[in-house]
Every structure is written in structure tokens, then in C-alpha cells.
Image (cartoon, rainbow, N blue to C red; front, side):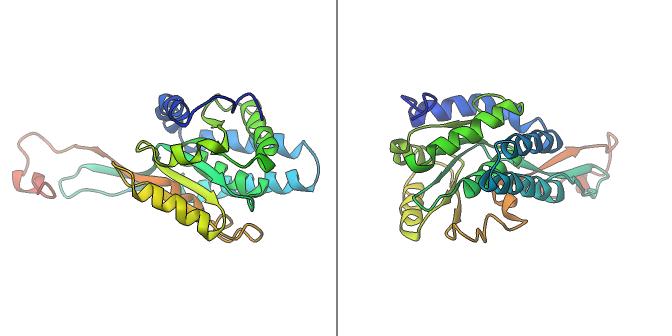
Amino acid sequence: MNSQAQGVTAVAAIDQSLALWEDWNHQGVEQRIALLNAWADSVSHRGGQVFSDTAAMIRFQCQSATRYLSPVHEMPGPTGESNELYASGRGVFAVTGDSSLTVIALAGQLAATLLAGNCAVVVVPDAVAEQADALLADLVKAGCPARVASRIADTELAAITTDPRLAGVAVTAHQNVIREINQRLAGRSGLLAQLVAETDASQLMTIGSPSYILRFITERTRTINVTAVGGNATLLELGSG
């Protein structure tokens, strides 16, 4: 196992990720897209069909981010205020899978998580641990801040999925494994966590959907009130109930 994953508990991994999350989320979509495209270039330089396909998956998620996350939607308000609807990250996601998980699926999950403005804690079986470490090494090489994405041992999966601070889980696995994770998430206290599940590890029908990335975001509104002092008080009260 890579030393990065040794001895790091789920609690410590979430602590580290939350300390970095706001800065990563505030970098903006365009900057994250540029960084992850550079990541795809690094991955493709490893050679071989698997890493070539993995790089293509990362670029696909970058294209989806450009289409769905980059635009800011203007929504004029009734009193003249400016309302901007935009996408934001949720927090920290666990990126995981069972024996069916492939490096291509892992890269798709990780890319969507990061592009949406989340931090990621990777929890994968030993069979794909070496490839996961290679992806994370290339990510840092491409310029991603360390610990925005990190890996912990798969023995920590139960602990991280029951932590109430976790914003969501991206998983490629068989139905029984997904069911177990969903039950852990449902049994937690605090806010509901997002479960983004892929059951078809060969065709990747979910991860390969252009709108897949929308499952990792939350919507926010930025309002600039330009109403003159002494304006229509009735209109100012709209939506305040």
C-alpha cells in the first residue's frame, strides 16, 4: 500500500479535506477545468490503452463541466436586484468501488467530484490501489493542491460513510455493496448525503452520461440589491415568508 494511505483514518482525511475545500471550491470552474485537462495529459503520457482511455474519460468530464457548470444564469428580480444562479461544490466526497471498479471508472468519478468543486477521499480495493496512486500522483504533478484528493485504506470505508460531515459518495459497485453504503448514509445524523452510484462497470452508462457531473453540485444564488433606499417596501417583502 502507498504510504499516503497508511495510518490515515477517515476522520483525519475528512479533517484535511475540509480545511482545503473552500479554497478549492472558490478557484472557479474554468481554473479547475484547465487543471484537470493538464491531469489528463499527464495520465495519457503513461502510455497504453488503459491510461489512454482513462485520459479520455477525464477530458469528457471536463467537457461536461464546460457545458453545465461554467454558465452563470441571470435571473432579474422584481425590485431590480441582480440574481446570479451558479453551481458550487457540496464538500467532501468519498470515491470508492468494489472488485468491479476499473481505473477508467475511478477517474470519471474523481474528475466529476473535483470539477464540481468538491474535495475527494479515495477508498478503493487493493486490486486498483496502485493505479489509484498513479492517478493521484499525476493530479498533483498537473498542479492540483495536495490533499484536495487523497487516498485512505479500504478498511476505512465503513467509518467514512458513517461520518456526518461527508457530503456524498461516488461508487462503482454491485447492487448489494451500493445498498450497504446507502444504508450507512441513511443511518447518519445531520444532512443527507448524495449517493452517486454506477452499477455497469463495463459500459459506464451513468459515469458516461454528459449530465453525470450535475450530481456533485449544489445550486447557489448571488444577489446584488440595487434598489434605491425608500423603494417599494411591498416588493422588497416578496419571497421573505
